[in-house]
Image (cartoon, rainbow, N blue to C red; front, side):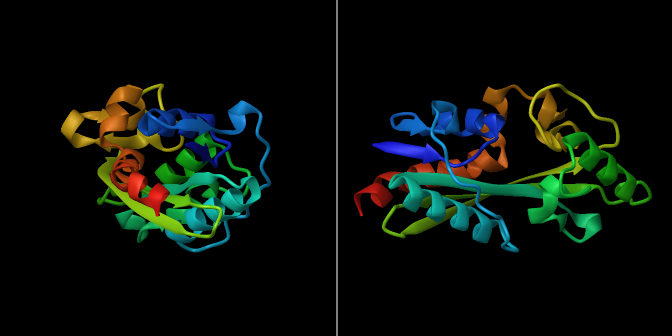
Length: 194
């Protein structure tokens, strides 16, 4: 069974692919070209479903897509679906992180959570979504070289590390994306047979 991962983010592909062991997993890294899908929904569920459905129909292949982001309590859950463009439409990870640290500078509450919604779509229009979350806090000073996005500032207390200090193996055990993918993995056989 072929499954396509609908993302252009190579680091996301690297996180998702090992969790779909046993399937023939394809992505743009395999030379498959896909159209850009405008993520214009106001929820993680809406964006991941839209992306998965459009690409599944375009490729005529089961497609996995995710939408994920950071929600920060002191900012009333802000960032959310705008996490990747928090500092502006073409902002870099560094610019987004700098804006986040500025916004939290005088706030006592630094609690945050990463949210990921993974959607699986079939070419016939069926779509299933799975939500994963992981709770932590934002620290001012960046730590670690791994990961991407807000990982250097997202401190995970149980391991006393930022997400950027975790190995991929460690991250794939506890991350928001791993939690969503685990839920998906438990249902994928049923989804593919239905």
